[in-house]
Amino acid sequence: IDELLTEGVAGRRVFVRADLNVPLDGTTITDDGRIRAVLPTVAKLAEAGARVVVASHLGRPKGAPDPAFSLAPAAARLGELLGADVAFATDTVGDSARAAVAGLTDGQVAVVENLRFNAGETSKDDAERAAFADRLAELADVYVGDGFGAVHRKHASVYDLPARLPHYAGYLIATEVGVLEKLTTDVKRPYAVVLGGAKVSDKLGVIDHLLEKADRILIGGGMVFTFLAAQGHEVGASLLQEDQIPVVKEYIERAKERGVEFVLPVDVLVAGEFPDMKTKAPANPTTVAADAIPAGQMGLDIGPESRKLYASKLADTATVFWNGPMGVFEHPDYAEGTRAVAQALIDSPAFTVVGGGDSAAAVRILGFDENAFGHISTGGGASLEYLEGKTLPGLAALEG
Ligand code: 3PG
Image 1 (cartoon, helix red, strand yellow):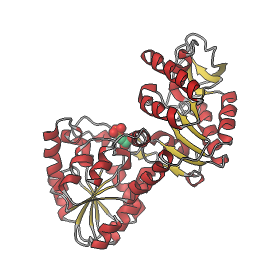
Image 2 (cartoon, rainbow, N blue to C red; image 1 turned 30 degrees about the vertical axis):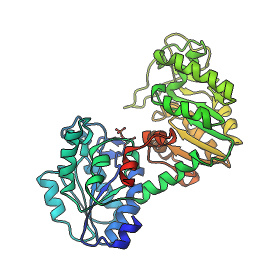
Image 3 (cartoon, rainbow, N blue to C red; image 1 turned 180 degrees about the horizontal axis):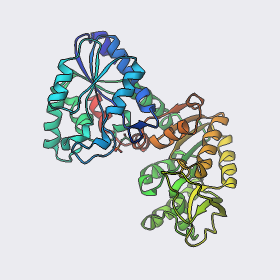
Image 4 (cartoon, helix red, strand yellow; image 1 turned 90 degrees about the horizontal axis):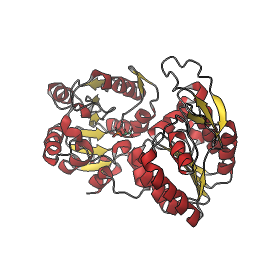
């Protein structure tokens, strides 16, 4: 946006597509990282006298207003962080939004309500998306794309709107792309990737790609059990994607051929049921060998031996990319695996990139200093798809 700032933005209405999709507990924001990440862009535009209109999605409401997904808490937090009054419109393109934008004076900021309260935002129908993008375009003179976490979505505000207005990339997108580009072009080796999260089906593309790039792939989270099953082990009542077993077997084979090391847990924490996330009541898990999970027991975190193993596999690396928690870290009994990986990244001399809404939130929620990591990406799916080498609609639209 430096180009835009040089042109001058005073008095112009600038639409900033941010990703304020923050985790909420009721109306309390449990991690405001994504709001802080877009501050440089919003603050700079406001300082330069722009009339800033900030828009974002939050969660996955069904194309209609739903108070559980209101952006109001995020707007309030943005105001606190900016140290300024931020107007909030209770709709996205309706009377409230138009009035909020019309009421802006130079240097002021307004946030409009959740983009996904409108079916046109996420529609697969080009005409429906275009119609919504036309209405968004009426709110502004210039578009700044800075919602890195959503650039992999072909949504109206991400993909269609930039084509309707002069468009620029914000500071966050520039930083994110700069870092991730390094991982795809001149990565320093050994390059280790830690992948966690529940479903292996969400990570297939990235694993496929990493088999050509990484030296070592450490697996954690719910995905572990599909890997263990692919190796012929019983996984009890653990999360299992049976239909993915053949794919995982093929990956294990290919990794062997290419000399890529897959690292799986040697022990896991198990319990008879999923912990109560509301009360966080003690779950009393037991530790078992990863190849001996008893029937009826589900694995919920990697075990103590695995923590040591993973730390040792990260100690001598030059680059680490980490996406996805190792266990159900939001429950204190299942946080140690994720904590150990975070600590290993901090202790390692490697350039470390934490990608993924969940793992980024995890390091902050577990109390780590985010400056101790090389880069914490605001993108989950977006950073994975970037690493896969896919064309991301929101980046392509900014280049066009
Ligand atoms: C994310 O949390 O990864 C982004 O905000 C995108 O959200 P989505 O997966 O609901 O599109």
